[in-house]
Length: 280
Length: 348
Image 1 (spheres, rainbow over the protein chains, first blue to last red):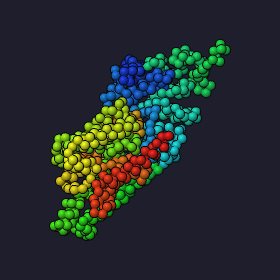
Image 2: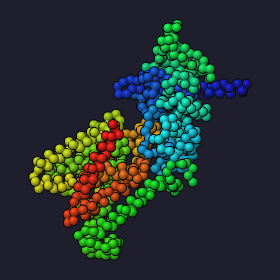
Image 3: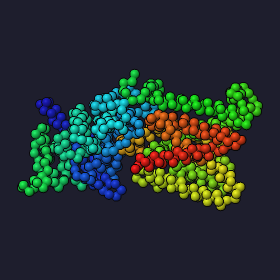
Image 4: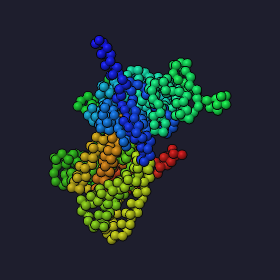
């Protein structure tokens, strides 16, 4: 009898409770409304991927979730509190962000750039400690950038540079990681390498939220998928449950076939294009 | 032991201040400090009455009294100290603006704050007809800040745009230049002459009474700049990254602009607009240290430039003491042309 009770209680607790959620937020730039009355929960421990056509508001949502943009209505809750009510450094200890674009200062070396990720943990008299050093080493090991540590960031290849920026976010040691189109501008091999890294990080207990352009990569790596269109969430859930030919047509206006990925058994989207339509 | 190869040498400090000391930056700072001390001693020795090193030191440390002590401590020393502190202040001011605008042209002398200070001074001297030191200083500060505010309002619309700030600043600088000429042309010749002399920028006749308040102000703002250095360096990574690291962008940028304008305006209030130091010192420091990140090398290079230019201005034509502004303007003009050419070439 007692066992059943515990089980019941466990079920209640293990319901996807979210550390990060948006409560009926309206996001706008100046007077242009991007999303109205949008609510979303990021399941704890998930690798959540947001997909949708260009200008559907997915990056804007990510900016709101990471406190870069304040919703004009509603609120973003981080651990049950309005994210805006935290001290900015407190947010930075819980939530790391890899933005779409960053600039490396002139002449900075890889290790020094990664060290910038420690900023939220430092102050004027405690600028560099043992803990910072360990975090930087750990982040560079995870991203395979340790052997690049003394190189100048300007002289790295695109793939290497992106791994360095990821290392910087990892050095921040936050349980939540937000990634805005992390694979853009990388070749396919580097894209997969980076996504595998994110998968590992997720399996180690981090919650990841990424905006991705490639549908098949999203369907393969996401544990939770959010499909957006015109600032609204059209569908969310496990990729194998929600990715259908109807959904892709509704979201992208693209006719396609959804088959099983022979390697990972996740949904694989094959666009029909003109050829496919003529055949039918 | 250093477990991470940063590509640079660091010395880990584990005292009450826990930080990595950049060995190259520290060495360069120390070398320039030594050079500054040497120039200072030279500046205390030379003049219409030449003194030996021994005489200078015994005057400084109180073993000599009388006329020689008066010359060294009351006449020559204030000029040297003012040059060192103001040079550092101008250089750090330039470094802050160049970092905010992400452009080596973004310096207070290029983007019009010095012209604005001059307009404030001319207004006090020519329109209000006052020539007391405090009213001139206040005029300079108000002129500088008003210019900064106007440029800020025109250039910062929904975020920082470095290049827009520079374009608006150069335009403001030109407009203020014509206003300054107009003010000068409409005044009586004698008043206009003394006002025009202020406009060149000079340390001639500086004494403790007039120099000390501004020296004190510049030191305070230099310390504030050191406090704000870390968030400034985060902002060099881009606004989104800085914000995601917990930097409050608007507050940080606002404070930094106030600090930078105050540094320039305090120095300008006393010696008039002196160009080149704010523009060049951060760039020279970058060449030497091969990194941004610390104000110390920039500050000592600024001190070196202003002190060196002032000594040169006093000695270059025998029997004549040039205003230091003439020397920095000549060197600075060439440097600015070179910089513009280089930027135009990389842009195309």
